[in-house]
Image (cartoon, rainbow, N blue to C red; front, side):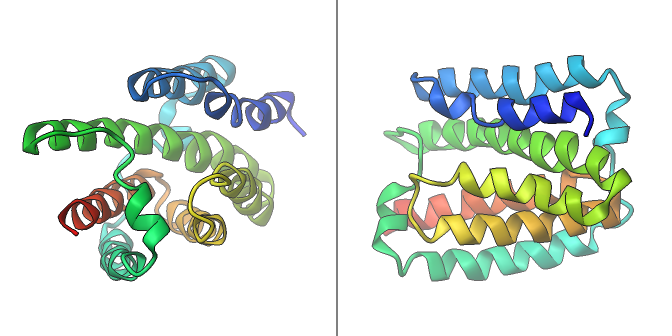
Amino acid sequence: MNPRILALFIIAFIPSRIPGTFNEWIAYLVFFYLLIPVILFRKELKDVGLKLPKSWRSTLILIGIAVIMSFLGLLDESMRSYYPRFPYSDVYSFILGELKMGVVMFTHEAFFRGFLLFPIAKENKWMGILGQAIPYAILHIGKPVIEIPYSFLAGIIFAIIDLKEGSFLPSFIVHWLGSAFFDILCALT
């Protein structure tokens, strides 16, 4: 396997191990999940899925599923008490928190569904799909337990859609909007 890809598997776990504030965590994600992979690969970003998808149809379908899953997530007290992940005191700080979560979601999708998925999938589609879904699910350990299998399944579904569309933007849009919608539901309950 390409040593750069192996390096990414190690890098995947670094930001979650560094203590810091919410804003510092975002900075770590930008550094480890965006800047380092860009330097390692030195490819055009479109080669790792940073381009418009062939179609938005799958994205719209997944957003509909995310809305349903958000309402189901409200049934789990551990989910309601864990989210939103950022501090807020009013509508403006909530919106700012969601914009910051957009950066978090973008870095995660760029790293897992971009830098990990696309290069590996060129050699072996299912190795690429599973190769990014497994570390992605492992990173959810410590969150509400239901998120571990859910993130593994979502990682597989996102990867299949992103490969089909040639872009990781569908998974980013669904992940961010789904997360924001669930945060709103949690804040209102």
